Length: 357
Image 1: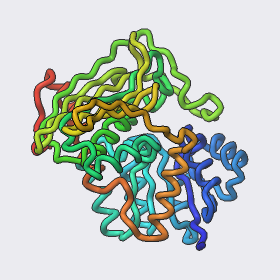
Image 2 (image 1 turned 30 degrees about the vertical axis):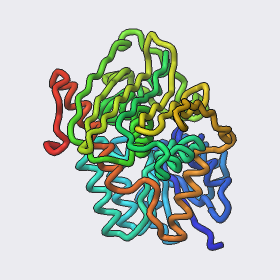
Image 3 (image 1 turned 60 degrees about the vertical axis):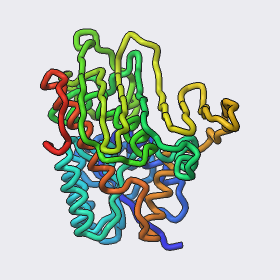
């Protein structure tokens, strides 16, 4: 097996907790370089994980001809530009979510990938969970019939990430809970529904905890070496959106960092032959056979690490040239849906047409 040499751009929590360990545990991969503008953190991470080369300027990392691929783990506002620079440098790219804050930016990244001929994959790891893979297989086999409605989300009680840092600074994050955790729930539902064409979106965002915000502990404190927190908090802590598709299906999404509510992480799918809910209790499928209603609880392998599965898929795509699970138009459409949720909220919740973005 030919060794794939990888660099990581951005040394924050998602790099330290997910990308770096996954690369180190993937056969046929060598993690050779890391870049971050925070020199103190850069040295700490390189030493901690035994990464031989470190750069405070990611352009220098991209100039290294022996590096085949990179993970982009920077703050959101840098995702697209760093990805485009990497693609132009001849590197395959795994870009953390959200790939882009706006649909047009996602299109620019996809265009750069097409021009480069390199693999460009969005890091939407929930597609790789055992329950997601099982549901997708059954849906594609026709066991659910037509999927006409889905709802889901992530609701935290007190879980604002990196309070006062880039997560809560709109100029660097692009938004709050919807862009951070809502993108996972949205992408998973959208993918399970078969990625229909989005037509119209309405949405609302709230910042109910601006004066009572509490840091939720992500990124983990030990990953924040050398970080500076200016204290800005100008993004939403709760958001919801309603999406209409060209095939008549609809989707409801909610995402909250902070709320006076029971925490929840759920996906619910409604089909003409069967439906399903996946939440903290596990996966349950609701079907019917010969007039008898059936509730099925599949035995899911909870040992699967979605980040390792994601990295294994990325490196397999590099070796084989196959299309990643996150196909270009789906990345663009997810970005447009979230962009439309924010735009709708700015206009009092009025419907936004995707064609107008």
